[in-house]
Length: 223
Image 1 (cartoon, one colour):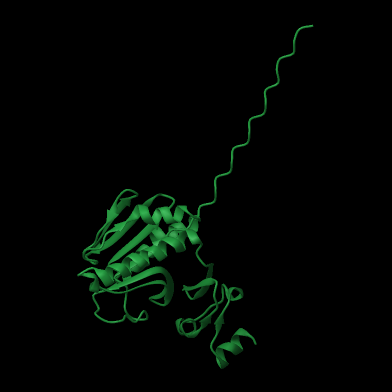
Image 2 (tube, rainbow, N blue to C red):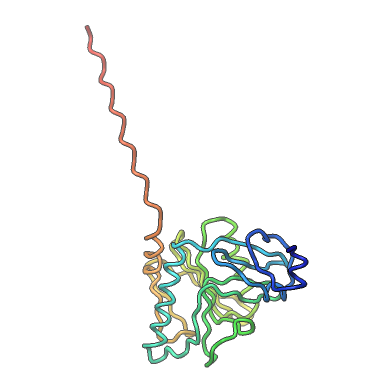
């Protein structure tokens, strides 16, 4: 079945082979997806990316555990509505895939189609394109739609950069590996950056062993 016929007769199923096709926001929102890839709509074009590796997934899962433990066990944990991984968030007519979205203060289950997360979290990938996307493009997009804090967790620079909108200004804080982050959006919650980075390090490729040095050739003896 052709793409045009599928558009007219049934819900579109997104697949890697459709990368680069033009879709409307409505077509994207109604489409179904398979597992193993991430799908975004950027400038009306379908963008397909591989699923994040374990070096991003493991610390992201642990972050979710910390947030849910805080929600269940801390006297002020009820401020957290939901903290979900791999969320597709509307950014105007675009659709961005957020590593973790944290909704606070609603007092109900959020609707990701209309409720902007209070906190957006991204785990930086290695490529230069991904670094610029996470540090610059998503920063501007997320803050523009009303995200109140944007966390960029970077296992390569060993930092967490926090951008926060304050009126017309953007305030930026850099958390280093030995530090923790606290925010009034999550009363009583403390995020120890070193623990997330340690989990990412567990999945780093092992260092290649150094080759043994070549034995030196002894000098020839005089006859």
